[in-house]
Length: 510
Image 1 (cartoon, rainbow, N blue to C red):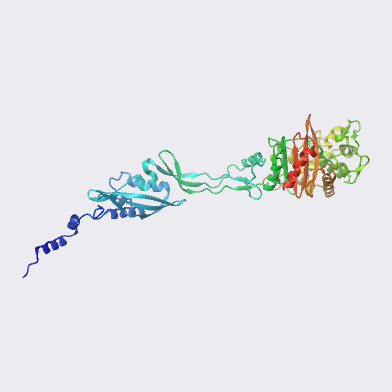
Image 2 (cartoon, rainbow, N blue to C red):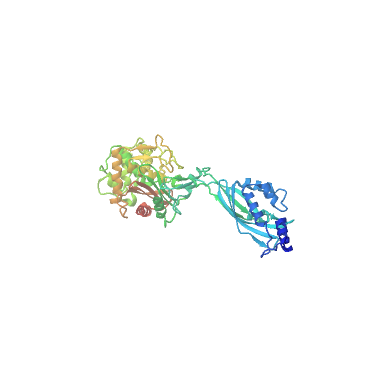
């Protein structure tokens, strides 16, 4: 029998004994990496991490901290981690005893969604086995050198005021103080807040890694019209001294615009003698007492009530003969209105007419009550009839008076939606409202407001009011196409010269 060569026997013996001998004796491959185990260890660790198998992870780590498992649990609980998916990268070796495997992870964070991150798993041979070299940044790079991660609450957005169309208010609009007052009523109305996952560096710098934005703050619509508000604000540009415009919707009393450069919200809270703009109220009282727009009246240069002092027209104007009530109104004849008031309104008719148009009545917006007192002498009645003496009004009140003429109904003013209440609307007698409209149109076509062209359909009334020793206040009130307004230029002098040009700019911009 032939014997097998000794070399063959040795090879067979080594093969039978097994791979352990082979593994210990085979040469190290190129690149210096050990024969086996690094990639397997890395993948086993990442798989255990995905499956929240913290015990297996702990066994695969070299010199794991005593709180290794607790750290991972706390990390997931504090940040609301619902799941983890890891994609291993390609392993690389540094000599035969160290390796690195980059990986990409995606955590699902409760309420925040997916949170992608990238990190690197470092490995080394320890006691003949491949082990993971764990550090806090293995969890996330932001934890390096004492950094930390946190979930922070983001406050909800406060409710904000917008115009009736849902648009923001124009810049430098003149209504800022009023909007601030309205906004105070919205305090506490905030949207549902959000959350953010943040990385905080050891130096205290904060970076948002993931954000659940809070819901958009509620946009509360006001009655303001953006184009009307813009027109009002720009109409005051170039006006020297304090001035204001208030515009309302004639049919509802809704405030469309406030451009207030009087200060102190005096377009609503200030009281000024309205001068001849109050003749709209006096005319309403005279029409209700039986006069008609074409009733003949005298317009002398001066008139003295029985036993009273003389009253004059501006510039000592006098009509050569009788004129109609409309013509007297158009040229703002003081003497005609004083004489008719003394004769026809001796028993409180003027106060009643004023109260029908909102005087002595609480307004349901932050505003003062406009005032007229019962007269005790004919001189007081005469002075009240031309908007002096006890008569005091704000631009808001006079805009509401003009609105009542156009619509036929006086309305409580509104800046935000609210339920209607009894007394919010007071109707004028139909024939009285029609007569007032004709008289206010005559002011624009043939009277004191005819020197400056106004858009077609405008009706109004000029006013020049004595201001207690200072220069007169200039007024113009009117309406056009459902927009009623009042212009006041404090100590501006003649209404036709100072307030009327502002009204013209306002109306042309609409």
